[in-house]
Length: 363
Image 1 (cartoon, rainbow, N blue to C red):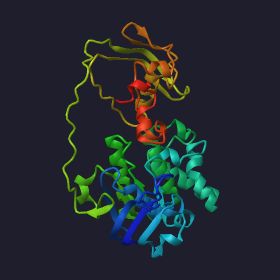
Image 2 (image 1 turned 90 degrees about the vertical axis):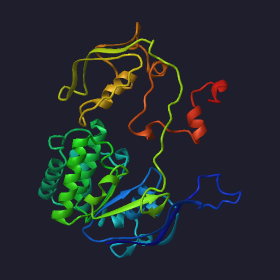
Image 3 (image 1 turned 90 degrees about the horizontal axis):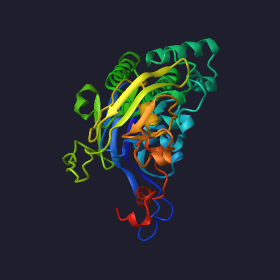
Image 4 (image 1 turned 120 degrees about the horizontal axis):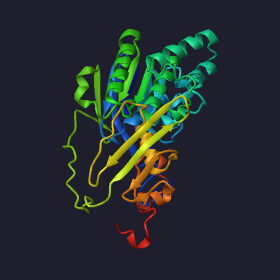
């Protein structure tokens, strides 16, 4: 079904980085891969961030090099056809892909239309389309969400929606780029169970990229471990250990208190009712819950990304409600679930230094 014969792939270097002894394609992401995936196998693909997992899935879907650009060495065959000759639209009949970032794949007004989009393009009759949509949403736990906007879904629910799109499309090969990373443990197990059902009962060939499942490799038909773009029998180095960093002790500061919060995106879906939270100085608080219960919404309300229409938010005796995001950033910092929403400078140095006064740039 899938065969790599000394397959290598290099991305083009960013503008201005070629020269000084570097060619345009010195940025090698995959190097001399040799493997096969037989029809009906469930394959686990693991490796550290940056090891090449996503790049390999991009190649198998035809996105690399036809969309990303780049240079190929060796061969990568899908169903006996070389990816050099297959753009993504041609490969879509064989491979369905769910990328790590669902925001790049969801664009219709409602959940129902998102699942229907590919079926409409294929000319699936209306009755058959309705059946597929209903079954796909029920399988992924999104039954009843048909009229919701994908933008209103949590990160984990968006991953489920991508899987529902694939289920309705029904290709023979599924390529999944960390679909479990944004799911709660129970939801992740449900998706894994669903994938096993699709593999065992419907014969789907599945390549699942997940960096945190290496300890469960024996549950899969095959395990491919990538390290710096090469296939490896396992990690060649111990995991990183981060020593404690000396810093200020904030235990003498004021508490952050959110009280009497009521919030809903609309009247049909209330998230918070008379909610109160106190975070004391120096505390580290773990906020957990299944997908869609309001974890990201709560963080957005604290930061001011969403408007706090009721309740109070104070840091000691300071009322934070009148402060916009820029002024609130003097007291609170926010790391989004999707880092693409926060990274926009051309270099790492400029990204880290953005917002600092010039005399503070040495930090």
